[in-house]
Image (cartoon, rainbow, N blue to C red; front, side, top):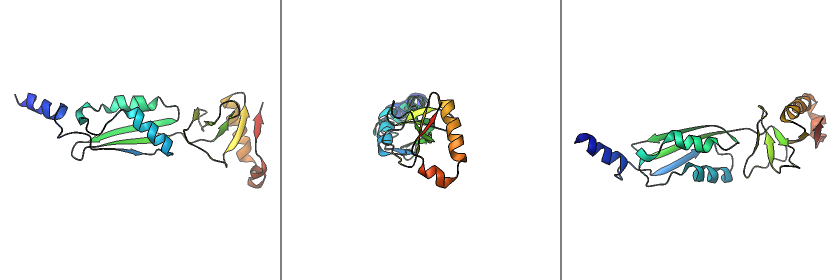
Length: 154
């Protein structure tokens, strides 16, 4: 009987429900909105019905997400989503795929709402070539780097 009462309180009662969803690490407001949508967590939903692993898997499918951690606070009703986004190293072939960037691991992604006029534009046949071009670019003197607007690697 005690188990049934406990199951009711956890799974159906509004005592342990989501009161707030907090998202940390979202680099843009567009990203925050996308994470909220992807999480499928609603205020008022029972905390026991929020599966952190399922939420994390849905969010990790986004190419720009490097890592995600989900936690539930049973006392406050807060579900915390901590995002570690990939950090754009340069725009990669953005003439072919607008907004596409590359990170230091060679992963390609587009970060919703992201703009950075200071980020290098690299045009290359492959992510590996782009990383090599970036190595060359960062080895150049800073004054010379500032005067470069586009690098092409072949």
